[in-house]
Length: 85
View: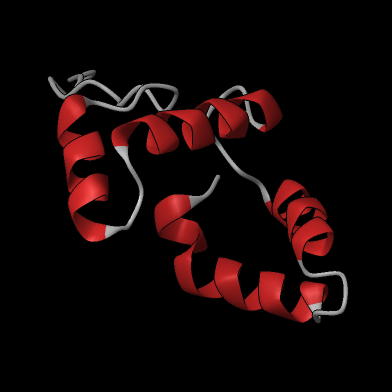
């Protein structure tokens, strides 16, 4: 009753060194590029959470000829419960 989990929620606005290392090993981006991308993401999503409305807005900017609504719907059906809020 009333038991709180001892696990703390992850701060979605912070990238740990471990996360940066994993990203540099699995992408072609440098540590600085990853930090810069993350800072840009936080300017658009200050809480560190990306909702479908913002995803759609950004996707349309990068892929104006794409089928943004359909793609967004598929992304959130597939990954939404794991990655996005």
